[in-house]
Amino acid sequence: MSNDKPDSATNPAAKLWGGRFSEATDAFVERFTASVTFDQRMALEDIQGSLAHAQMLSEVGVLSGDEYHQIANGLKEIAVEIEAGDFPWSVQMEDVHMNIEARLTERIGATGKKLHTGRSRNDQVATDIRLWLRGRIDRIGAELTRLQTGLVDLAEREADTIMPGFTHLQSAQPVTFGHHLLAWNAMLSRDFERLMDCRKRVNRSPLGAAALAGTSYPIDRARTAELLGFDAPTENSLDSVSDRDFAIEFCAFTALLLTHLSRASEELVLWASSQFDFIDLPDRFCTGSSIMPQKKNPDVPELVRGKTGRVNGHLIALLTLMKSQPLAYNKDNQEDKEPLFDAADTALDCLRAFADMVPALKAKKENMLAAAAKGFSTATDLADYLVRKGIAFRDAHEIVGQSVSFAIEQQKDLAELSLEQLQQFSADIGADVFEVLTLEGSVAARNHIGGTAPDQVRAACAQARVQIKGRH
Image 1 (tube, rainbow, N blue to C red):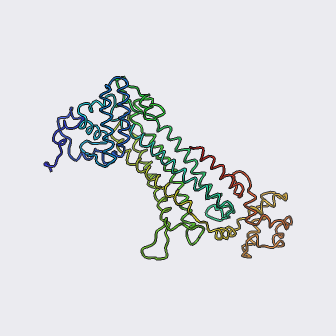
Image 2: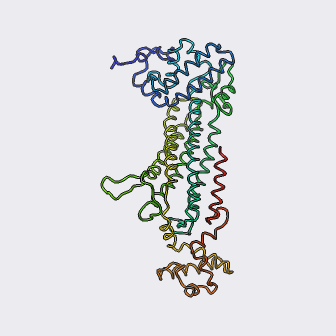
Image 3: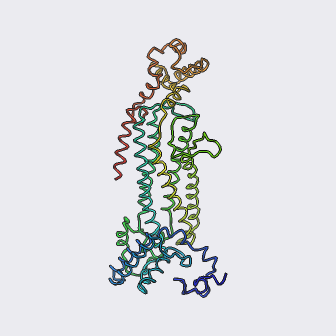
């Protein structure tokens, strides 16, 4: 194995930081501590940050104009190499930053060594992560908007479709399918608000905080923040390089988002089952069984439901990572990237799957209506009817309970009982009772903001579109 050791394992000075060391890094430790296998994902952000840093150094006179142009051109050429897949990544160079800096020096000579003036890998990586995450937040926000747009469109199409509403997974009251879909949209709207709120705290520039205390060079942090599209520089150099609360906050967002998508997935799985048979999922979002030819498995919602545990784990991992770190930067923070990267990937993939799938759902309206007619879902309407007749609600509740018990004995729904049968429980029940015992009458009666009445569903869809369009 000794013959296979790279130069850096036999010569500590081969490291860009190796001047202080007299003993080479152990070959295993070199691999163990390297992050380039995963942080190379931030390569273009690293170059973006370096370009801004170099421009600022030129503007304040630390770099000459010629030096800046050499560095800028070299970095742009490296970006082309990376995008083409031709960049020679090296574990011996440890991370994305050192790989790019070494390649720059190889390309343009000693001038490349001046790029790192006035900064540290500590503020450099913090900047890269924020740039990378900001880009992913914008992509996730766009995909979330696409999902909500499709959801609202479907809700409007199904504004009159009656289905059972459940509590405790027991039939409770009739609702419209459109109203149910808008409940999903309400959850996702709050998720979008959380995401945009998180973006505000991500969009601060730590560049210039250097290792932990700032730098003695006459840098302009506001300028690099401006060049990189940040709202402002971060305020404290120690905090700037050491905290990852913005990443934790983002992972908390993904955990809530996936929790909401998981709840929707659970309902899709139930509704697609032969026991419910409320919806049809297009074949392209399902798979079959290797042994049971009749099966059509709802794999997409099942996988989304399963991936919720994955992002929850990433949130806990990052919280645990940060909980015992003293100020300022510690090597522990190398472990922040893989959970963050995967949480962002998972959220984006799940949103894409849902945004493609939801508009293609087909409601089986007859089955939904038949299910809503079971389980005495209009019992509350009968109680409300009696209250309007002047009966105290608790007394009305008792009367309806007795009516339901009788209907169960008769194996009928409340609407199927005769007027005489209903009147044995209260003389205040009149022939107009059957207007409130119909499913259509029940949903139409909930005609207020947030109610399930078809008119309210259509109004809520219109309002949701206004909110969605207001994001652009």
